[in-house]
Image 1 (cartoon, rainbow, N blue to C red):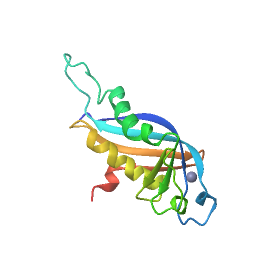
Image 2: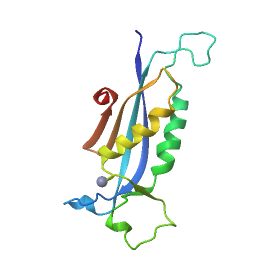
Image 3: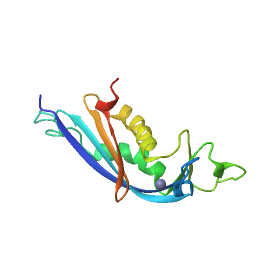
Length: 148
Ligand SMILES: [Zn+2]
């Protein structure tokens, strides 16, 4: 086998509030997130193929992640659907993303994996995701941890 992992880094600004949390992060606040998307596959071996030597064109990966993640979440506010912030308030004029989950770094990664995986070409697998929330904190999702 000649499998190779490729990774592309993305950056976005996002605000959130953790629901029912017993600390400062219960307040609406923002992060400069870094998202690392790692794919695994066998590089194309065909001198007539425009993507010869590549697992996947980084530009194609960028298109998927931009449409599914960056355009949706960048400069948005993510709130759990049962968040107190959504009670008796309307945010229709703003980019508010109402999530089915508490928008922790961990839950965001699980959501991102579900959005990216189905759009990858056959033969290319999502290997892992890494979401950096602060200078000292990040969460990682690995396909291999989720096979059972
Ligand atoms: Zn936070």
